[in-house]
Image (cartoon, rainbow, N blue to C red):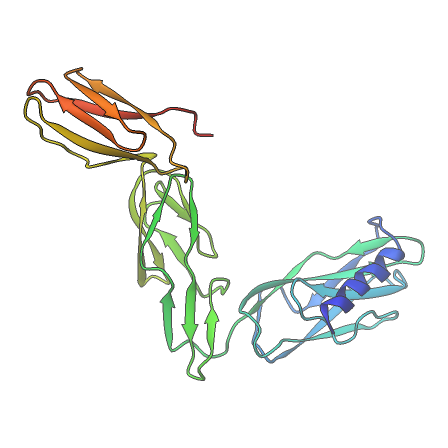
Length: 273
């Protein structure tokens, strides 16, 4: 069936009632976490209280649906045909029951894990280095190439793992989304073997990072606010005040008055919200 049929099932059940009731409905099989393969047919068995529902259906959170649609009498036995080109990963099944007395009940969810029966001949990632601003996010796509020539994205596969080598600098979720937490450098380890270096920039970077000047010498400095694409203007603080700073709006030029060690610090002219 199509996803349009799936939506129609939900509408039919909703017409039978929209309030959770006390009747029991449960997916008996498959067990949660069952591994199935693309191309397989998966039987789904639903148990209910006797004569509790006028209609029962099973839905899954993807584009393929049961072959039976809505059943109006027990036994409630459904089948899902897993497409041969189905993306790998976990999917959720729920059973829906609609009673003639105006009650709709949803079962506890059950997950199935769709995985290829064969292992990929090669696994690669689509990025070899990430550089993120503070609070920024990016994804690491994991690509599996199989002996039959198939190429699949493996991020949602339960066989794919992502581990941050320094969670204080970056975190990574189970699907490869990396979030910058603090300035620093670390790496994401994919499947324990593929390392992706990650750099989290400080809120403001300065180029060059170090300048040596003689008295009356000068040098240009560029500050970049990494957390904002528009790169707002900054104001420089000089400690001790042994020189002068002139700005043309994009580049700030420092002139030394005497030979002395000093610190320059850029301050963003507006809050970074």
